[in-house]
Amino acid sequence: MPEIGGTFDTSTAEKRQSFDVIKGTHPAQVIESDVVTTKHGGMGAKLTFEIIDGQYRGRKVWGFINISNPSPEAQRIGQSELRELCEAVGLGAISNTDELHFKPLMLKCGADRQDPERTVPKGYKPYGPAPAPANQAQPESQHASGGFQPQTPQAQPQRAAAGGGSRPWSR
Image 1 (tube, rainbow, N blue to C red):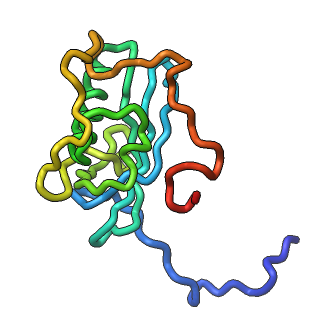
Image 2 (cartoon, rainbow, N blue to C red):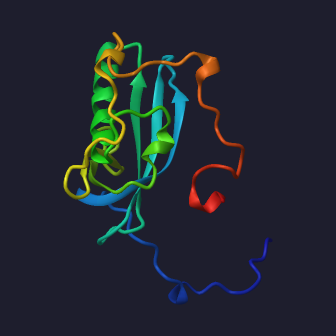
């Protein structure tokens, strides 16, 4: 029988933090992101938010935003959500989700429709007064599919090698 190296007494261990659904609007920031291919051949951004103040400080909320999708409606909804997020952190155009990292915003949280015990992002607002977009896209650069302009494979930005990203802990 596997031993645990002593006796564990539950009365001396700290209770875990509650993981009830977070509701309402809270100060947060994107701390991790990735762009993935969806099962239908589109692209989506997987985002990890961390609440930075208040009762839920340190809690994480995970979200997904469609960037491109074979369904025009899913793509329209996703691009509207990505626009709201970019505007909340003061960006007018992005080419890499790392540009969203560590910029404070107000994150509206609520329960997921399919999994009511899971917290998901429901909206984004500026942290303080609305910031002016730092890198406004030129209107003539709009693409027929909306605000997303796919890049050719050779023009795709290269991900930093392991440990060389822009995250503070990887320096």
